[in-house]
Image (cartoon, rainbow, N blue to C red; front, side):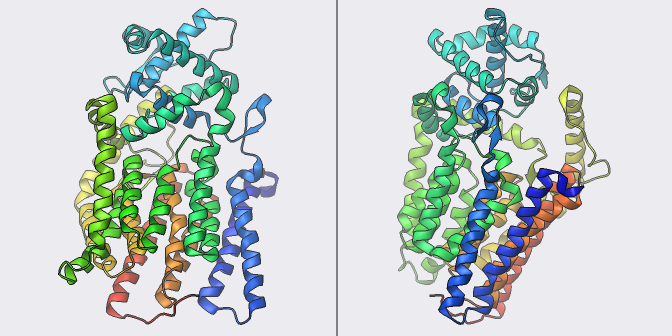
Length: 531
């Protein structure tokens, strides 16, 4: 029975929340409320829905269960990648994290045979020279190199952190999966700043609380949205945030400073609304230094301000203030890792990302992903050594298919980019940031699914617009999109095809947003300001 499975029940709850909550949310902008009693009743029900959506995101308090520790807001793979990766970045960089972890585990197994230590199989070679490395190959190639990179005290500390992780989650399966991933991929700026924080927080004492840093950052974002845009946009934010299938709790919740870019982006939108353009530029630069792609949102915010500057013949200085804040902060953040780690940090980061982006990860969405589809795309098994070899073959087949169609992709990407920048030039900076940033993220990049947590900001900026048909359609589309995300996993079992259909849904969403913008240019409508 469908309802006998707790996961299906939870999926059904999320389905009902976005359907019911989204419908109620659209009542006020579309139909209005005639009396104060009606409005208070509507807001009261929506507040309840938003609280339930937030609880839904947190698995209604179940979080993740780790044996004797019970439910914890702790994601072991994320903590290994983000906390361990940033803490020991000076020693392991972008290429040696898995190898040094494998060396440490094998030494610990020999030094303390009675203590539980995971059994290792092959690991991913992050240098790309070999695809897989056996434990014996790791010891032969990396043992001396890892000891040279670490001081005696730091190597002992590294092993101690791994021992803490064994105690929390002693699973051969998990460690085998983790050391087969794509490695540490956060920026040198993240490594410099967050790595310093990681070195101040001992894992053995703080592991239960590290995941709540991101919860705090999300709460901080919500607070700024509430203070700047109001209660109703906050409700829209929470409804989308809590029920968005692409950014659900299972993916990255319980991580370590994964939410910094989102918080910077949310506060930057608040600053744009309050016309604090210099500080908005500062926050856009911080978000871009963290994850890179928020640069696209900065370009969106700049588009209408640059248009105003051009039309006023340089009289309007808002664009200058935005660029000034972005440029000064960007330069400081770019130079910081060079001072701390040397220029090699940025060189290795870009080389690692080039190799990383060549892999068509199964949890990415984007316009380019739609051009990878071919006969044999679905029904794949990429588990373990044989699966990873199949993945390499499948990856090559996907790129070969793309290359035969790339002229279509580049034509669509170019036309869409021109269209969205054209329509953004007359919009508010906050809306332009979301329209241009979101569209270009989808069109130009193959982004990890959790990036799309930013979709929760769409109803915030759309609600701030004068109410008319175009605004109401924009608001409706975001709820329809999130609703489609809930439908897709129910109708489609294959994981690869689920993400393909997520890309289709996003393509339709952004195409309609661009068409609405073009319609506004051709057939402008007057709107009424919301109270």
